[in-house]
Length: 247
Image (cartoon, rainbow, N blue to C red; front, side, top):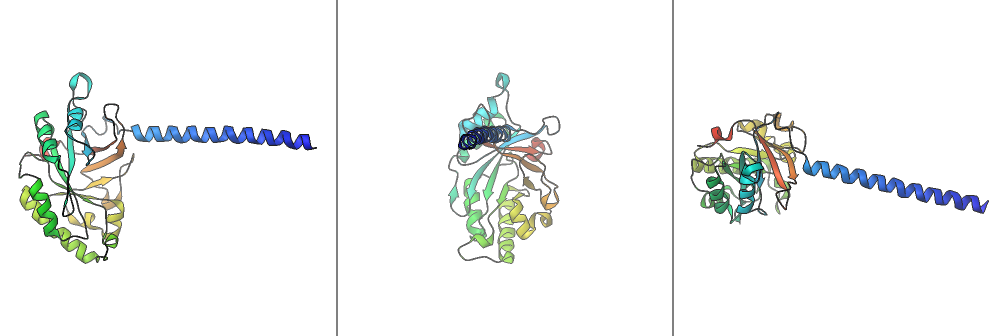
């Protein structure tokens, strides 16, 4: 009887090892496909990238010239320029200049901080981002909510400061901004659906439906791995030709 029990224990352990291996292989395969998934170029011909503070002008150069025979990998770029009242991407000017030399339309992103007054945030943005008609419309990332502040900020205050901020940077840019609310921000405030501004929505591998789903830009893969780059990048889709958005 003891031998039979030992035999079945060995069989169970072997089965558990095989099952664990299968699960790990499946998880690894799913991760690889997620990291390398790109939307169909046939269905979404205008594709671009979002650079954050980890990237620099070398990334711009790779995206501009890293395709077959030196062809660009993207049709447009957005780069995070400013964060709240004091956070800055000090490489933004270099990225902007490099993109311009490569003929890639580029736009600036501001990460909005609901805990900080609008005037301080707009001052940070306009001192870093030039008044340049060749830039794409400025984009405002909306993720943190007033509940995240050291002193919680009421929804009405968040919206009031956000409207003030938008009016100030739109006067600087000479065009309406694109709003990039996360699903959580939109659930909290519903601002994107009510603002009548172009929307930049995010959902990996599937078109987003929140804020009415009527997006101008879509973050289709928030962490795409490309063989030409040593770090992941946000991969974007734009509905219209970026040349129509710039200028």
